[in-house]
Structures are given as C-alpha cells and as structure tokens.
Image (cartoon, rainbow, N blue to C red; front, side):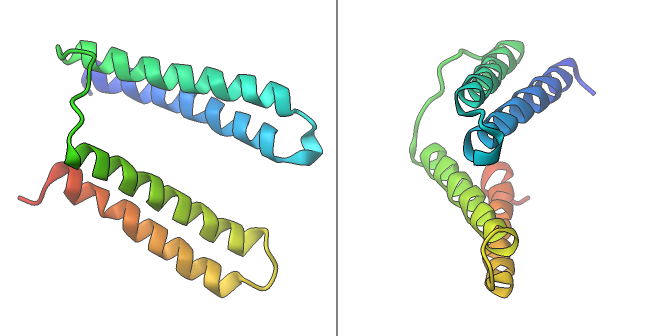
Length: 124
C-alpha cells in the first residue's frame, strides 16, 4: 500500500467516524447532546477536509479543484445515492409498516452509489 493511500484511509476513517457520531449525537434526542454533537461533527469535517488537502499535496497536485460538469454531477449523484440509501434504512428500521418499501428504496440507493464506480473510474 502506498503511503498516500494509507494516510487517506486513516484520516478518512477517523474523520468519517467522528462526523457520524457527531450527527448521531445531534439527531438522537434521548442522548441530549446536541451542542456537543455539533462540535464533534465539525471536528470530523475538519479532518475530512484536511485529508483532501493532504492527499492532493502527496500527489503533487494543487489544492484547488477544478469544477466542471462531470465533477458536479458526480458529487450530486453521490449525495442523492447516500440520501436514498439512508431514507431506505429509516423506512425499514424507524418507521412502522414500511419494511418492503424501505428495502426497495435502499436497493435503489445502493444502485445509485454503484453507478459512481464507472462514472469515476470509467469502463475499460
């Protein structure tokens, strides 16, 4: 494993976990930890943004990212796919009598996220 991949993996894991735990702290009312959750989530976001900067520096690229139609479309597809998968999970685990629809919506979200692979890497 290359050094840049290892650093990205570690920073991404730590930042992602902190962001996810912070969001749980904010959104689960029983925990009564909204303000602390915001702080933890912001720390996670800072680590994830630092990961992006560190990765680009290790690759010898500039920090700025060129925005074009493909980049914006890829980001939007990732957001829609993640939200669709999350709604499907909520439908199956939180809301009552929506198990079948939740599975269907979750599978649609998974398919949307799988579409990112050929979009980013291309088909050879």
